[in-house]
Image (cartoon, rainbow, N blue to C red; front, side):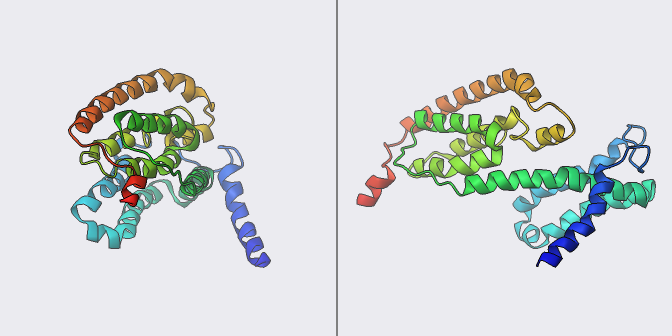
Length: 251
């Protein structure tokens, strides 16, 4: 086992040095100017995003069995033309640079936050009233910038679902939870949102987004929470008071 680990380290070390070491004058690298890379190069990126968004809805069986092939298709659609245009040295350098200095750090961060929050289970007898739902979403929104949108969503989605299990009208609760906790809430630090984390890896100050995005985020959070509270109050008044999980189990 030790020999295998040592072999992996020795194999990847040159790649790490190539990706992160040296200067641009010493290593073949990509000229990132608009003249060199036009807007057409974003097509594979748009394609993979649309595939992730559309295929599970219109062709779920196909996507379940072939999502890896679809992802590979869009990857080859980018790497193939890039290889022909820039050559193998620049292509290899950029792949290693993105992989070791951007992708792997992001995956490690995401895995850590996801694993920690996924292992925490909040319990209690909660009833999904408008005030409670708004409070849970607000707490998740605040936590999202410090433990990641994925981590905050994983931590609070189960208590929110249990609290609203007996409500008839509850789709809007999950929708606003996604808006605020899983998206907008991660605007204040690189821990909250992947693009902000990539910016931090590129040298952007950790608290730059905290100062730059605080006012816009506050406006969006207050506005959406206000809309949510009004909607949830309207639907809640149309229903009977739901029982807590403990009361339901006793019956």
